[in-house]
Image (cartoon, rainbow, N blue to C red; front, side):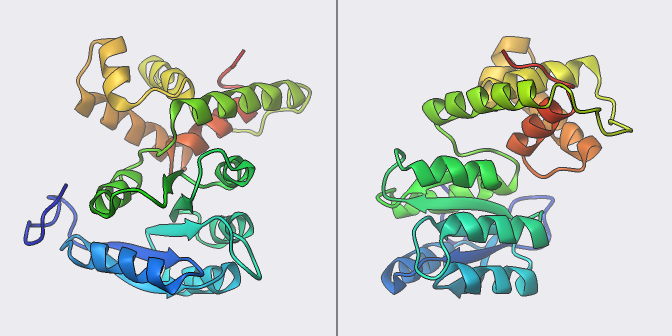
Length: 233
């Protein structure tokens, strides 16, 4: 965890811009206070429902949005779709009371990068924000397994559709890394599997996202399955 007063992450001149979305003011305030203590993070806005979140994201262009799943007027799933359509670079972390909620799976399919349970230690939130900003996914193995099954179904349904051309070419090593990402492995596990360092894994993931012009590991897997670069059985 980064303590108050620590210098921002080297190589990043601007703080990570965060939008907080929750219909409970107390939760918004708690999250804002926790993030405000971090010199490399800036809370740029707070929204109380999905409609307001989409409007504010379009105007403020946050790097990360903390998004409640269940809200009045417009829920977190629809808001996630709206934000990813207008500001695709925004990483979205869903805030949920339970990782068993059906809505959560739909939200991740809609473009969310992962989720945090609302009973998480407040001191863990800044590191979660940094993690998704750097391209990590906050998804547990059970959720990853469900997504992989969905990707396999998607691959079968898309089998007759001609691939979109041109499809960016990944190196053999980058494809190895992407296959392991699709299995739900984190950087440490991938490094151990391929006998390389975690930093090398991070570089490969960054190159994959740059070539595919995407913003998260999960988007890269979905794209690779859809374009039949990657087969999941």
